[in-house]
Length: 179
Length: 386
Image (tube, each protein chain N blue to C red):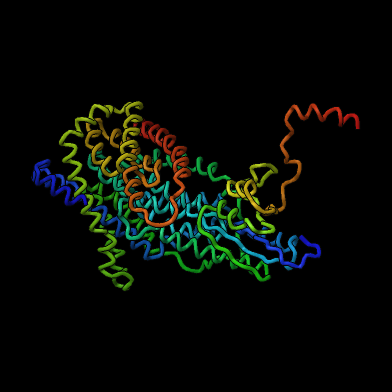
């Protein structure tokens, strides 16, 4: 990422609720300062859709569809999150706000990037595959660009690694004794 | 749509004019009760009650997603029980979303909790759901007795939802801590007067029942006090109040009741009666709730309860309450509460991508069957204890 290359590298920073600070901080500490930064946020339709559905279930009563309010609130919240991220980054950056299926939108938007920075979004109490939620797992599996995956907070200790399967343990045993 | 249909059925003789008038006179008080509750909830919103709930949830959660979910469960369950599921869906859900967003938390689990609890936490009181109001008379129960029998099923259904949500949304609930940069302003006050009026209205439900008067009068009283105050302070106009009562929908319920009476009278009743178990044994109650849930999902829970409550009534109050457990919890199985509404919605869809029905359905499959069984068990226990 560094080197003598003078063209600006494009670095996409995927920011989402609760973990955007870690993604922005990783960009500040690990990406070249001269990179062209893009802050990327995806607003999922899941919550407004749930409200739309519940409203339809009321059979037409109630004066307004709460799904419409949620769409408006979601757009405002996304704008605020991007603002906060841009302030923390403190460098010139593009903002990309997309509405749709989170994981697919991130893969598509970052396809031509030189680097995508993202945070784990699952159970982060221990090291392991569950520390990636559905969206991050999909992006890690499908990304068309290099990915930098960070922990939103200090990572759990290595002692939280699950024990190796019994077969591996047998294979490792003699080596450890021989050393 | 239901009103012209009702007119048509009367015209062709599917239901006599007298039968329709009889049905209308039985449904009339229910519709008045519904209107009063709709207005009461609307005025509570105008007074800032739900915004106050949002601030309380934000403060109480301290930015921790699991704590916020617990508080959303408390507020959504109480709102649904006291001010009806409409209030939770239309008035509380946007507040919950905004609260989660301000705390920098993912909103999805909390919004889903509102939509689910609007159904499953609507078991407690006759006012919690229009289905309950429609079946209340058929159950032959007084208001306090209805609440006493449904308290345990209500808690059981909420407990199942809570257990499932905690696991289903484990990843979303693992993310986040309060964000000092985006902390909200907590200075706006609590609408104490409004809360007192709602509490007195609740007490009024019990008092009117004890005095042998319709509890609808308590709802009218509560709505009238808040309306008078809102009008005096020029915070609401008479038009707002009429709109809050939603006259087109009230007419729709009336029309629907007449249509259902005509359909039941012309064969549906005798077709369904053999399917509906009699008695109040545990297997019978389970089967009644299951049948009610299926019917609610195929059609909608309003026609389902209009059809089933009178058929279940001869087996006693327990059977009617089992119908309510089915028609209230059942709609969580499908995105819009029923296949009929879903198809109608599909045909109307004009914008955006299709909703992720897979997730709604998976969540429904995890909560609804378990919720039905546990709630019916609780009902059965309540019937035997008291």
